[in-house]
Length: 339
Ligand code: UDP
Image 1 (cartoon, rainbow, N blue to C red):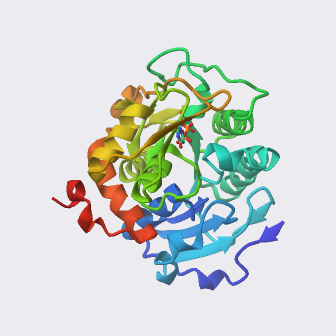
Image 2 (image 1 turned 120 degrees about the vertical axis):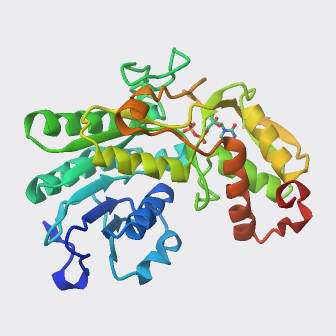
């Protein structure tokens, strides 16, 4: 087993009462936002990431912080960390369809072997451990509003199966360790999340539309654009994860924004925010692409006192400038956003 921190003194611990938190996948879009929030609230953070889809840029500022430590490691290989660990978040897995389909076996192993290695770490450290599962456990849902009791409609042998079935199996592992081995496990089912620091090239619809609109290219709509998604702003999602970790709830909890939009409506919104009309091109709908997705967040409201606060319009206004800066586009000319 690989010992990931060979100089235990290197990670500066916080004041007594502060937590030592491991974030697997901490250099990803969501993981880096979680790391930043944990550091800001005074915790010590050990970020583990293989940088397959995460990026050192996402944690560049955090790397200078004395309570932050980055370890490049793939969690499918067993590892340990010396010293105290209080909480472990498992966000490690490529999450956009093109990226998780690029190496499906590795994606599957990340959910299974990676989860087993983190659960083993949690058992050794007597730490709480949270899995970021996904709305993909519902597959292509047959019902318009997905609550946690819905068992889903997943193709076990399609292009999305490596992600969907990997996460479903990871939920089972977390549930078993929680129910029968006494671990303090938590399971978040995350719906589509967006915001600054999304990878502009990872192929997700929000990043694709913004990048395409800013670059003067046609927006690519897959299928006829009538399929729906519910988009949650990143800061809301991070808040939900931290509340879930602090709660006593071991059963899965949906985290997402129930505002539901077709892809055509999303394209309209992005164009409206930029005050410019882009061409739209229609491309084939990928196999097994879910037709609808909307979270029932009743349990999150009741158990965590959580609900999203950033509507899609506001979230896009916060996200587009980050992409513009990244692409070197001057938004002064985009009247809709700077007024
Ligand atoms: N999509 C689209 N154009 C794009 C990228 C995606 O119309 O350029 C569609 C995709 O087919 C899906 C929805 O947008 O119906 C959300 O796709 P995304 O990859 O963001 O997330 P997921 O399918 O995992 O929800």
